[in-house]
Length: 219
Image (cartoon, rainbow, N blue to C red; front, side, top):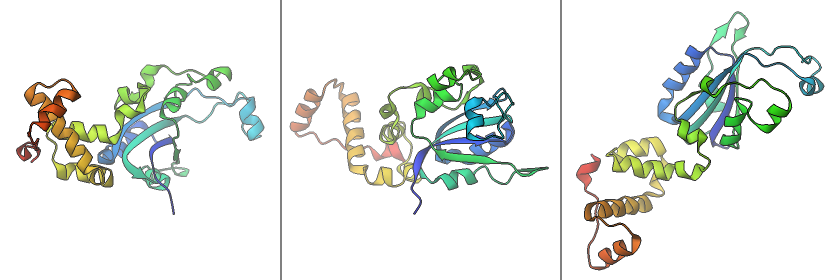
């Protein structure tokens, strides 16, 4: 059985318009993405040792690196299929995909700002060449600030409907519904009654106040 992930790294030989079309068509599944065009890469001695056909100093075929973070878990094959169906004179245009273990290391790698790329003398692409849907996500160094639970709470507070959030997050929302509901309740109570600390909130609730969602806010 294929296992899922929320973070993927892709290499694609599609053009930018085709990539944007693929990303847009799956926008409801994508938390954030970034991509960059590599047209100055060359094979080095390490590449040649791995594959004798990749002669050191030979330019690599221009390609795009794409990083994708999804709301819910997907399989590698499912994400790769998002980019299938495009052909040129040589047949179907290739896009490869793999699970991305470390978002921030890959963010450094796609501009060749990571230590290994610098040591190998790879061309360093400017940060301005990266097209990104949420630069704060990829540049943050604390991923926990951007987990699904935080996103759901913020969306509920902004008035996004429960039905819409269920569609986007599925079991991540359903399984944690009670805890998320309590957090949203507490935030609303604190904001309504100008409560600034947890001790005051607990005391306020112990006095018999029962904080309930105003369902009118979530239609």
